[in-house]
Image (cartoon, rainbow, N blue to C red; front, top):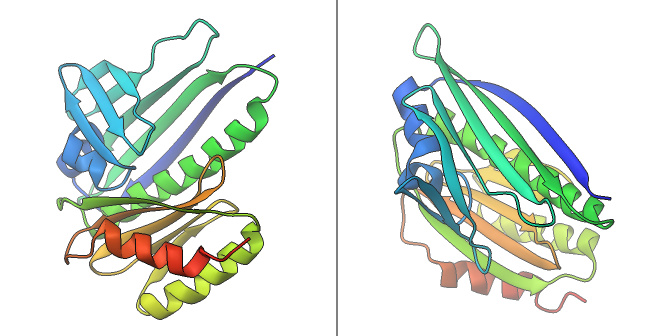
Length: 227
């Protein structure tokens, strides 16, 4: 059966067209808001996020106004494509329009689509927050796969309590059933319900020396005995 989808989102940010272009069309820029480590080179966009490592073909690059890339269509019809349209506005602001489309094959597409939709909402909110508070800066991405969660309601409660103690100055900028995003003056902190069960930390650190090992210990301590 499968499911074809297309979504369009638009944000206005207090950043220059050039800063928005850097954020969406360069490896260091994408590193600062998306997930994992990213490279834009040789007409491709490559992402490394744990075992997930897709390569996208650049299908349009008209600096600084349009950047588009996508996977080829697989034999079962699966594909995903992203398009970013950038338009400068007065007083140093920029409008960014984001279009995501694709096809998920099979009769069990619904769970994957839900995870993709809720995760995508976090990434778009992170991009808006990055361009509002950290435009022009480059983050160091940290990715940690924590324990597999049995009870997500309990896991989120444990996480919220532990994060409130660890990051007392954090401001929440996004939350939905699968994700939460927090901002401090030095980093963007995100937690995701991983497809398949683990809690994932996917942070962007602008200042400081915190490490993936630090956050691995945090997740293991917070959720390690969670059943």
